[in-house]
Image 1: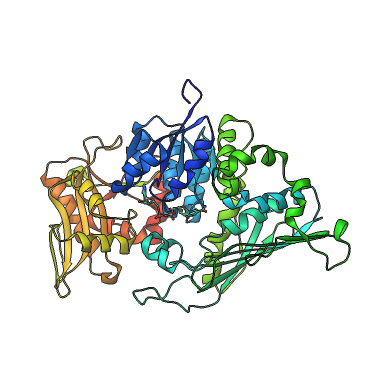
Image 2: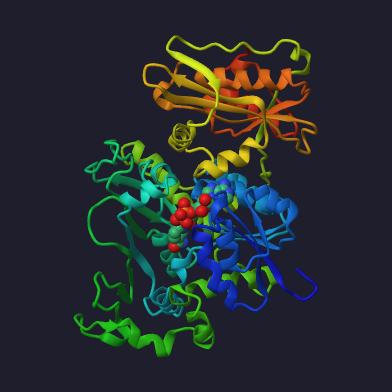
Length: 554
Ligand SMILES: NC(=O)c1ccc[n+]([C@@H]2O[C@H](COP(=O)([O-])OP(=O)(O)OC[C@H]3O[C@@H](n4cnc5c(N)ncnc54)[C@H](O)[C@@H]3O)[C@@H](O)[C@H]2O)c1
């Protein structure tokens, strides 16, 4: 924190969701948006001006390295939440992350581990827990007006087929996986109403596939996905997420049933959110409009701050969310959605994705509080063995494919390929140009499928020294079209980039990858790259990975 007591915040994903944190940051005197980051470099000037940021970055690691930040707000697509949160936490930079917390159980474990060793605060920005009706119901539940809550429903119905095509990551991470891919807006408020409870097991089913994307492909996500969640208390919660059905949005449908009352949110415009309380309503048909209870039950804190908060958008929710984050950083009170609450909201969705594949089998949801003693895991690093620098790997392609250098006119094909494999978020001309400054001459490889002229694989040989690889050359952005699987294209482009770096005289040639990218890791092993055991968790992780890959050595 600066000497003047200002918290310097960096916003990543500043050209997308990150923008919407502006008003909340403006409304809080001690918060300053100091830096913005987005891979969409053309939008950075506008984002910096809008958010009043002094610094702009196209790369998150560089922002963390160069900018003097106390905290980051992560508003990037969901597959980046964990890697970016871990990178910040490792530098003891506080994190407010968009939802969901992560996209796989493995990476969630890594995030929890990173939180355990970091001095920084982690909070998940589950903003639906801050809407006025949801806060009011939470307060009423806290005061026991519903008695013992034992059943609840949450629905997030948000048709986004068009948005899918604009924010292409959604086509993979939200509609490209079956099960609940975006459940936290529904589950978040309910878990706060059922305070102290958590989901212990999940059974998930879908309504089938009735829609196709503009390319004619069926969405992997079923139209309506429903998960039944068994609570530790024995209660039951039903979550429905539907991002494909043609119909009006309904993202905030909720119900809560307790022994002494119930709550039903409005299902259509003009309807009221309503409650029935045994202690007040008596007769079974007498509902009360939730609004009428605001005077009595809206927390004092909300009332005092509301005028200020309402300027910040989302009915004040954004303000209270950032305020809670700042209070957690200052140590005034713990983050209401800290790492374990974030896991309670995220993990049931990830387990539902396994359940739906296993014919709706009930599956246990892990409790992240038991993941103690785990360590933050770094990325896998692979290197070319120094004793083989005189023997570059062979580059072989099957008939019908040709390798050449990237050339003007390849841009559209390259962008299509990177979007198809969902690597590195949105790509455009500016981003390709930005990377070209790191690429060695003759080090930007593309493979063309000759019958169609389509660009089907690519890699880069780049100059990228890092602390672990001083003077290093990195093999980067390796992609191979899944429609051309089994042709050895990934192996060929990796071998080409390694050979180029050897020819340029690099003695440390490396690439970074992740445990879950199993087919890619197998291709790298096939090329002749070897694991770098740079930390003591590496041997165990590589052993597991090699076993799963059936890899017994080249
Ligand atoms: N809480 C909410 O109500 C709410 C609403 C919308 C979106 N979201 C969440 O916010 C996130 C972003 O959604 P969106 O609709 O803004 O998506 P988007 O694609 O419109 O915007 C994401 C932005 O991140 C940038 N980006 C992508 N990869 C990056 C990287 N590696 N480093 C830096 N910048 C990168 C993109 O260029 C883009 O500007 C998602 O996780 C989504 O789930 C939450």
